[in-house]
Structure formats: C-alpha cells, structure tokens
Amino acid sequence: MKKSLVGLGLALLTSSSLAATELQSLENISQELVEVRQQIETLHSEISYEKDSFKDQMRSYSNQKSDLDVRVSRAALNIKDLQRELKKLTDSSRKNDYLHESIAPVLKGAISALRHSISSALPFKLSQRLSALDEIEHRLDNNIISSNKAANQLWAFVEDELMLGKSSGIYNDTLLIDGQDKLVKVLRLGKLVMFYKTHEGRFGVIKNKGGNWQQQRFDDADSIAQLEFLFDSFSKNIRNGQFVMPNFMPRS
Image: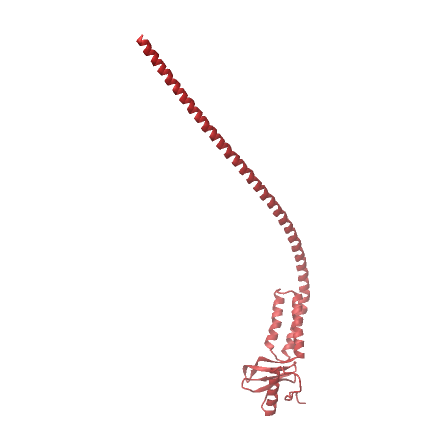
C-alpha cells in the first residue's frame, strides 16, 4: 500500500513537472511569436519607408529628366540659332574679303599720296602724322581692321589735315636746330608758316622757299619783340585783333 502511494506521488510530481515544462514552453513560444510579430512589423515599416524613399527618388529623377529634356531642347534651338548666325557671318566674311580685295589697293594708293603730300608740307609734328598713316596701313595689311574701318580712319585723318590748314595754335614740337633736335615752342599759322622759340629765347621761322622748307633765325630787335608779343598772346588764348609779325614771305 505504501509503495502504491509513493508511486502515485511520484507520478503526480512527474506529471506536474511536465505540465510546468510545457507551460513554460508555451510561454516561450508565445514570447517568441510576439518578438517575431514585432520584427515583422519593424521590417514592414522599413519596407514601407524604403518604398516611399524609392518613389520619392524616382519622382526626383523624373523631374531631373524633364528638366534635362528641356535644357537639351533649348540647347538644340541655340545650336540651330548659332549655326544660322555662323552662316550669316561666313557669308558676310566672304563678302568683306571680296570688298577688302577691291578697296584695299585704293586705300593704299590714297595713303601713299597722303604720305607724299605730308612729307612735302609744313613739317609740323611730321613724325606723328606719318606714324598715324603707317598705323592705318599696318592694320589694313594685317586684316586687323576692315577696309570700311580703314576708310573711315583715313577720312578722319584727312579731316584733321584739312583742319590744320584752317587753324592756328601754339604747341610743343621737336625741331632740328643747329644740328641738334630741340624741344621748342612753335606757333603754327595754318600750313603756311611756323614760328619757333627755343628755351634760350631765340626765335626763328620755318617757311617755304622754292618748294623747300627752310629755317631762318631772327636776330633783329623788332622781329624778336613782335614774336614775343605774338607768342604771349597765343599762350593767353588771345586770338582776335591785329598782330604785327616779321615778314616771312619769299622775296621776288
């Protein structure tokens, strides 16, 4: 009897232990299921986030593609415009080349004639005036300027030369006096004559005699006084009135 009770007790204890173990297993499984569910929800949230991010990125790419398409279209239009403009410039360049070949010889002939005329005219700032002609010719020969522009510059030069013949004034210039280049004051009366005054106070005139320009010094007191007054008046911008000056006309 006692053995039966002991066996029964052991059986009950074993059964209870097994039940407890099974209950613990169920609780563990339940906990694992909760954790798995949480992981699934987390993964689902991450997948949703990635899908939304992917959609946003695709929209951004789509917008960028649309913007690039617009830019490409504009660039294509610009290229067509540039090609049309290039054709116009090419045609214009060919026309200008033809005009240049036709007009350049005429301009060079005019420059040569002007150079000869200036070289034989009143030697007022002679090197500067000849250099201006040389510069126009240099730019024309090297295609730095077009024939039209060269013609405009040459005409402006001619107008300046014409103005020299109509005007008078006092300037600084370099003249060859007594075998030396000297900076002097010159008083130019048109292109007819040019008086000069050195730093030493000596006076002279450059006048045309027999087709040649010659210098002549003034040593007499009357001529010196007349030129002192004339230079002083022009320096003070007094141009109106009667002025007496030495006779510079060639004697017959």
